[in-house]
Length: 118
Image (cartoon, rainbow, N blue to C red; front, side, top):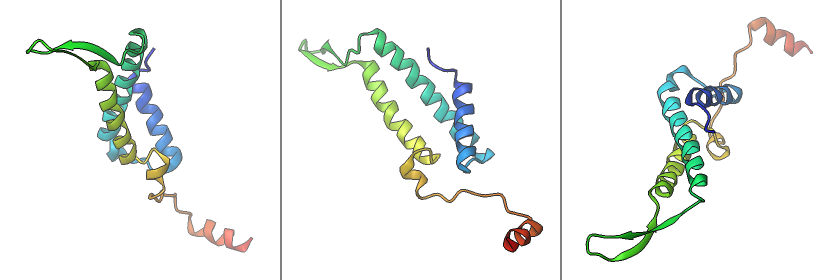
């Protein structure tokens, strides 16, 4: 069963906080990304229920019958690309994270002095 979108959103925020890259200003992008992941999980279940059917016969307006990708599989392919794009935007994959410097909480002056005394 596909996870709820709010659950996915909370997991994304938790991951970003762990990596030190979360900012509340990313809320809209996170919501879109969570929605895409939710849709993908839902489509995966449908794809499994359809026996992982990738192609189907299709008869066009001219009467010619050809094989084409199923609409569900095409939607999943598009979502995969969009998910990869958004994971790059949010720095949630190893490649995009290489180029990011996480913000760290600054130490107080006293803590800095004490750490230098060690």
